[in-house]
Image (cartoon, rainbow, N blue to C red):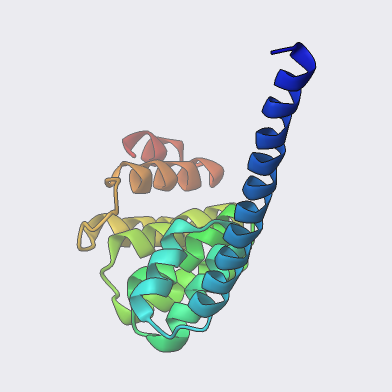
Length: 170
């Protein structure tokens, strides 16, 4: 068998494979778009709650908003929205979201910590200290963390107010 004939035998199947791969890629893209479109129409709270926690930035906020529209009394989703806003440096909006969670559960340590952190970022140190102390005394639900962030933020606020002796105790 000469090399030209061998080349043609190899070339034809390669073009067929490439053509099939392109068709499969187009089909997969179409399925992904269709699935995404169908999913975005769902009013399933559990779906949007999960998306609220899994996505980042504006997409997370949009997912949290969808979950809140279905169940506005879920503290975790409000906290998730606050965290997503915090990541985008939208501290006043984040503070409002944490306040919504606190309005639903006034002892929720993680929401109170979010309030404390954002008040510090907004340079409202006296209010931040109060929020941190409430977080420390709260229900001890910290997500994956613990009270150390509340103590640290309390110390930061005290230092900014030049209350150094108290800051050292934090």
